[in-house]
Image (cartoon, rainbow over all chains, first blue to last red; front, side, top):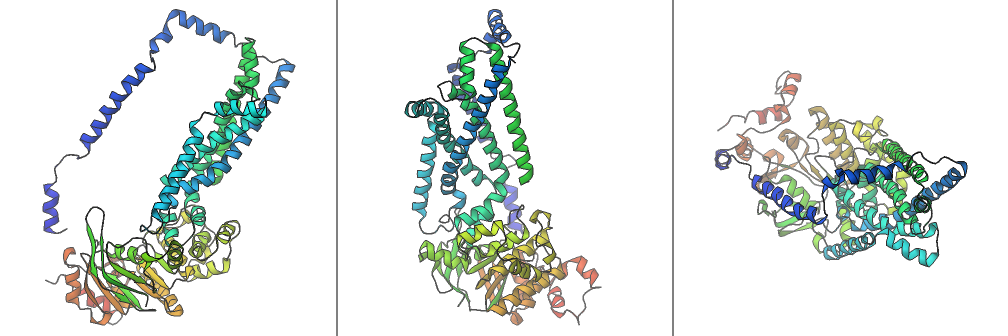
Length: 282
Length: 284
């Protein structure tokens, strides 16, 4: 280091120049959060009130013991398979929607950003359009789509599958876009700068780094789809939800708790699948 | 002509001036080494010549084209004719060595061929031959995260050898290799370029390697050309001046104490250049 550089270093203050900005950010977060908690009527003390505790206790007591009669178990197995089918078909369709949109929307595969080169504005407009599509797809809750499709296609799983495909296509696409941008993008950039195409740069430069995360998020979304298909069952889209709806309406807590146990098993299954796939891709 | 620059300048977004007023030409098939202290602008120059950065002043002519006036399609075709060896090889660790090497031709292969090659390698023989030049053929089907830093750097070189570009840009291509391997790897780059008539511009940390393998040497300092001469005309005084900010210590492989010990000290008969450079240490 030469003399001038040492002098310049000595002139720097012995304080973290970013400290004030960080403190300001923390204060701002608190100031913003407080009215939100008020608005949400967040009063945890109400849970511990004696009469409320009794209500909770009675509600939970109705769930024991879980129903195990053969006829109900038959229904349960059928409904479980239906739910799995809805979630799997929905996620598969969602993938076909999400993957192309994410590839177009991600900045990590922008050729025109290198330099920047020709077609930069067109590229930015195209990415913004894809992001807008993804936002619209996921902004409308799947239950709204399900209500609409039940009207068009009639009661049954098909409505659930389509509703999941649309909403989850939007969610998967958005998160894929961001995962691709947050991994090491230098390999893909180097390939693009050596004249390779976008798909090749994706396959050789980005996916090898991001495969684990992409898979784990997709399996997590499949797990969410299993739960979402239950809610959609309440509006007649089939599966465990429809069964749950009937049990709750008949105030049959035992059946409801059997159904909940199945959920627990399904979530554990999703975890196991995720772990196996992540190990395979490690 | 491989490239010509006219008053080429680069200023970063934060106002830092990386390069200023460069007028350089490289003939087709010519080889030149770029040396200079760290921060001199060697990497910036390579990124400009590789069309990875756009100049903020002046212009570049590359293989007969002005890259920034081309359409997106033509620019892509031009980029496929230039091969950059990066100092840190941009290779995902989970990739297999063969895939990393075959990726060198993604610019000239149609998209379907690149994707199909992930299912079954499209050119095992070609990748093997490129890797064999760097004495690493036995690791062809290993994963890149099983390689050492030096081995990975050689895979990065093999990728560009497999690409067969008309202009090879090398950014400290042998910085992670020990002296013997560095010498051999540079020799392979030079041999490949001579065989195919390709031009080479390499930035090098070790001045002795630059003088040994390159007929022409450019000294870069503070983003400007300090000298641009045939290797034989580069004097110790010029080198000392070039590295003035680093205490006039001219970096060479011979400065590596391990190598000096291995050689049993500098031998004037065996390595006259090493000694010549070494002798300028401590001048001024």
